[in-house]
Amino acid sequence: MTFSSPLFTKLLACIVFACCFQVSLAQTYPSQPLKLVMPFAPGTAAENGLRLLADKLGGALKQSVVIENRPGAGSTLGTELVAKGPIDGYTLLATFNSSIAPGTLMYSKIGYDPVKDFHHIALLGVYPQYLIVKADHPAKTIQEFLAIVKEKPGTVNYASAGVGTSGYLAAELLKQTMNLQMTHIPYKGPAPALTDLLGGRLDMVLTASASELVKAGKVRVLAVTSERRVPSFAETPTLEEVAPGVKAVSWVGISVAANTPKTITARLEKEIIAILSTPEMYTKLSDPSIGLTPMALGSERFLEFINKEIGFWSPVIKAGNIKID
Image (cartoon, rainbow, N blue to C red; front, side, top):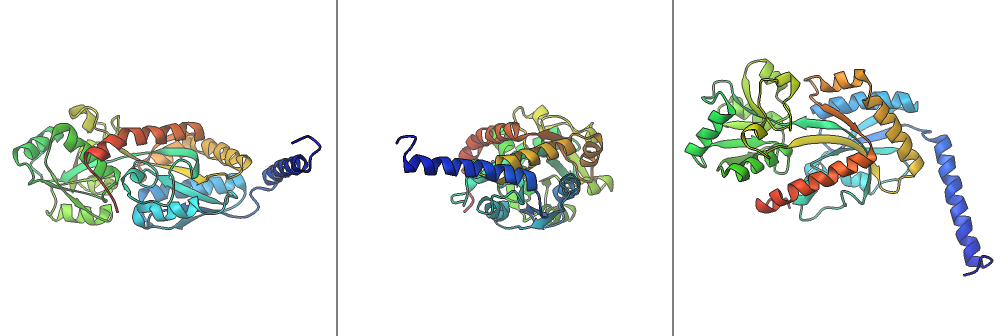
């Protein structure tokens, strides 16, 4: 192919057109409201945090950002819709560990690649899981609870918000690490599990949504699953303090479909990181009503975080033969 050939001329024209298209997008974006797809049902603590971000991002972009709940299939339904949707930057995704990593490692069939099919813009932060028991439970500490589990193998039951969730994986890792036998009872969300815990039908629940019950004195937090202690529960140990290597957090970020123009992803990343980096936003997201530990990682570090999560959980999921069909 020579520089004067028709094929070269067409190729050059395509390149010029693509560059002009990118410049045009940068100058006009956004020219209409944006949609933030939330792949869970309404009412979660994560959604409260996302609404705060959507409000601030709308102000920065001078366009409204509307949250659209698209629950189903363990959060993979809404996630797949974004993966296969428009690449114009007007459809954002609230990205969770259950739909990206390690959640996707457990599905025998899934309609998207968690890395290749997205541009992961920013990690907002992480949610620790709380290992809680009813207030009148005989175990007053995590050590006492684990002693009961060892003394009565297979008789202690626990609940999570479902197979593949962070609470479930934290318990699975704990069981594998300490060679424990506990019976898992999956629920479709934290609310019914907590109801059964208070009713005496469960021994323990791993959840990120227990602040109000703790405040009311109805449940006791024995441990948190984060790497470090949570400031609002400073006296509560991490699971890793009694079982080295046992840690698990839920996390939430913002992503868009792969191949979204770089000018748009760069703009979104810049605005979101700026919002998350303000003291006001840090304070609001850290409030127990939301319970997020803000991180504000940009796209490069967010992708590193995702790959690290995949690497950490892959052997745990294989060892436990955890599958979701």
